[in-house]
Image (cartoon, rainbow, N blue to C red; front, side, top):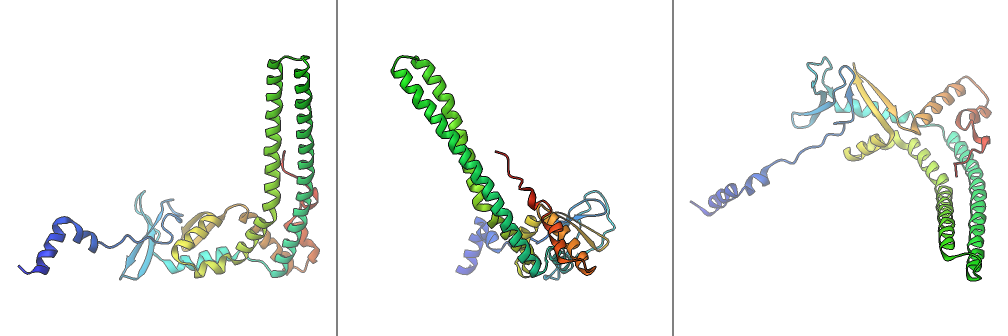
Length: 264
């Protein structure tokens, strides 16, 4: 037996040959993301002729009439769904400006709350300092001081925690809003050019449920993209009907003037 054949036999006996020749498991883009509209089962993928990917109902609940569908069909329809979030550049500019104005309102509200909480913190500290003097002068005993000061220090910690929440919200409110708008604006275009794993991430972030039945895809947007998609459609309809541009505010930010702040 020659050396090459002998080495191959040793590989087989040790299991290394099998591991080296075993094909890696392939992960298909839409597996687990789309359900059959007929029976609710997941759609599963199948590779045919080494390059064509077809999806079909898993049939977990019995034989299903939904035919096989090429992956490219899903690519196109999902790109159109994500494209439903896109709006005109003038609207993007207007909404960004309105978001900035809303952010200014939120910032003023947060600053007011933070100022009030800091005053409350200082008042509690003054009580603790005054009571400490009373303890030194013998007007109150140590046990009473320890009990009351512990209560007031606990209230101080709550003040600091609430201050931190308002400061963090103030810092990220505008940036996150603009990032969501930019993502929505580019989602359809991005989807067409992304690799499989990035497509899955984008769909999981924007959509919550997708069903396929009779050649039609039905998708549900996650928040806040559901409201955004609704407003895009309504604005397009109003624009086609010739309504004045001032109607934009009624669609996009109907509560802009309410100055509703978060709870303390």
